[in-house]
Structure formats: C-alpha cells, structure tokens
Length: 442
Length: 78
Image (cartoon, rainbow over the protein chains, first blue to last red):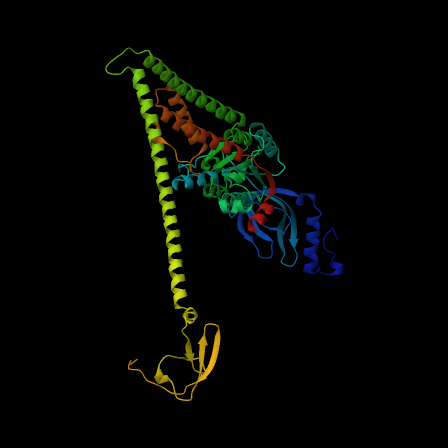
C-alpha cells in the first residue's frame, strides 16, 4: 500500500487512512523525541490531570499535551512562557488532529524569569519597609538555637563541628527540612513556624527545654536554582514573622538571597553563621575569671588601705603629745572606764531589780499562805460551833417528830403525839402528855 | 555615684548588661578612694553579678536534638 491506493480494491475508509498516517508519523524518527521551542498559548491544566496547550511562533503553531504524571511541570510555566519541549508527534485519529505528546518541558531563560521575580519581591518588600525594619537583637549567649537545614547535609555537619569547637554541648534543636526542590519552600516555612513555637516559654517548658532564642536557617552552596527557595516570598515572610532573631545562612559568600535581606543577621555561609552567633566558651570563662580576680584584688586593696590607715591613726594617737585637758591615752582609758562603769552599773541595777522581785513574790506567797491558814481555822471553828451534836453534849436535847422534822415550838406539838428525843449518845421515844405555852411569841 | 546605678537582678538583665556593670564596678574599685561601706556594697553586687554570669554560661549547655520536620511538628502538636 506504500505505493498509493489501489483502484481495484476500492476506496480506503477514512479512519483506516488516518491510522495509516498515524503509523507513518509514529515510526518516523524525525517526529519522535524532537526538541522544539516556542511560546505557550492556551495553557490549560485540565481537571483530569492532563495539561493542554498550543506551541506557537510567528511561522506556525501546533497543539500539545502533557499526560498526567509524564513529566514535572515547572510552576513558573504559564501563558506566554517560552519553553523547550521534547515531544513525539502523534495523530489523534478520532479528531484527525495532529499534536505533540510532551515528554519533557522546560522554561527558556528560567533564571531570567526568576531574577525578574526576585527583583519584584525585593521592590515590594522595600516598599513595605521590611528591608529597613528594626532588627531583633541577638542574644550574647544563646541558650537554645534552632537550626533549620537539610538533615544529614554537609552544611549541618560543618555547623555542628564548629559549634562543638566554640561551645561544647551548646543546646540546639535541628529541624531537618528539604532545602531544594518543589517542597523546599513549604518545608522551610513549616520549620520556621515550628522553631517560633519552640520560642514560646510555655511550649518550651512542656518539652522540658528553655525557649528557642535564636534561629539559623540555611543550606550549603549550590546552583542558583537550588538555593531559590530562599528567594521566595513565603520563606521570606516567615523569616520576618519569626518570634526570635533569625540568621540567614545560605550558600557561599557570593550568593545574596532575599532571605539575607530580611533576616536579623546575614551570614555568608552556614559556618559563618556559627562564627557570628555562637560565642567562645573559653573566652567567656576567662572574662568571668578575670573580672572576679580584679574585683577581689581591688576590694582587698581598699580594705587593706583602710586597715593600714586605722593602724597609723592608732599609733599616732598613742604617741601624741599632751594637748588640752586629756591626752589621747587618758581620753581612751576614760572612755573605757565609763563604758565598763556603765556596764557594771547596769548589771548591778538588774541584779537589784531581780532581788526585789524575788522578795515581793516570797512575801506575797507567805501572806497568801497565812491568810488561807487563818481562813481555814475560822471556818473550822464556826463549823464546830454550829454542829448540833456539840450542843447535845452540853446537856441539851433535840425533839423531832416521827418524820425527823425538828420541833422547836409548843405550837408544833399535839397532846398524845409521839416524839423522838435526840441525846448526845442516842435517842428516846416519848409521848406528849401536856402542853404548856410560854409567853414568847415565836 | 556608682552605687546609684545598681542593677536589679531580674529576668530582664542580660549577660552582656551584667558584664558591663561588672566592668564598671571593678574599674571604680580599682580607681580607689571609695568609703569602706560602699566598697563592701560594690563587692557584694559584683559577686552577685558574677554568680548570675556563671549561671548564664551554664544555662547554655544542653541537649542536641535532631528531628525531622514532621517529628517536631507532631511533638509540638501533642
């Protein structure tokens, strides 16, 4: 069939013909894995995951598709981007449409685009006043450093080694993040957020450490695109928003990133960051020691001076010639005498006072005792005299009725009544024969 | 008068402030000509500042924690 159509077999159905064309295209090396450049128009990322666009220049255009997952698509690619694609030419038989199936796509002059965006970001930040904002002050002795960088990276190893040289055992938390690639910006932002949380005293206390008081964020050197996360707005804004000072430590000396412009301190490399923020332990110990020695020496010297002055004064006093009424010695001994007199006098006074108190207490006690004795004797006497039994001994007797009620008046008696006579040593029953009232009206 | 500037020991005092004040105290003692009681007061203040500085140096020592981002995030979320 390569020689055209054969009239004897009749016309070819169009579908067959289109597929014929398709096979021809797909087997021609000229149309497979071709590198093509052009501008993007009608860029559309479909919800089914595929991406459709048209590649165009002044002389022509062709449809193109990137099947989902076929290749990475730079987020910077957009309508109007100039790109290079590696693609196979294909023919979609159903629509009779020729299109490029893209295997790889890349921006032309990506760095140029990035640089443009970086410039724009810097302009925006400057207009917002973020480039010349007041920087947070770095602690002289950081008590807890958070380091946000690639875990297992050479930069981290360098930093750790340098820290141990300068301040062995300095407290630090290393937050391992991606520092390049698609996820780098968001991971660095999350790392900065985590470090900021650790700077809150309550949070740090919960994790049993002092709050983070310094953050180092960075990575070692690499190609400009590899460092690019540190030029992106989210990372830059997270640095500005951090609660504690942030040191930007990215790449080599010559790399200047937007993170460097907004950080509280720019370090030229990760190692440089350590040199700038981690003090030298030995230096500070020596400083403390020398201040202590100077403090001690100076104070001692002053005290010795004062003592020497006093001794001098004393000897001058002793050797001083007679002047006025007393000489110095007399004056001093007089003072001493007065002092001891005062002391002795006071002691004697105290002793006398004590003696007086003792006497008063003794007298009071004796008087009390005597009073009580007298009172007891009086009580005893009156008790004795009022006891009716004592009266009976003297020849009187007491009359009661049967119920024991004392009868003292004739009015209480009835003739023939039985009464009881109480005598000194017993009692006797009697009967009333006759009642003779006296003239006493009681 | 150097005594008038006594720093109140509180959380706000930084290590560098303490060192600066210590340097002042030491210098004025070294110059001399200070009454005895003021000397003792300054010495006491200096001793307290030195103790504070020593505590600051000791406070910087601690653990080295190395964690993956997700690990520290989940620890913070606890």
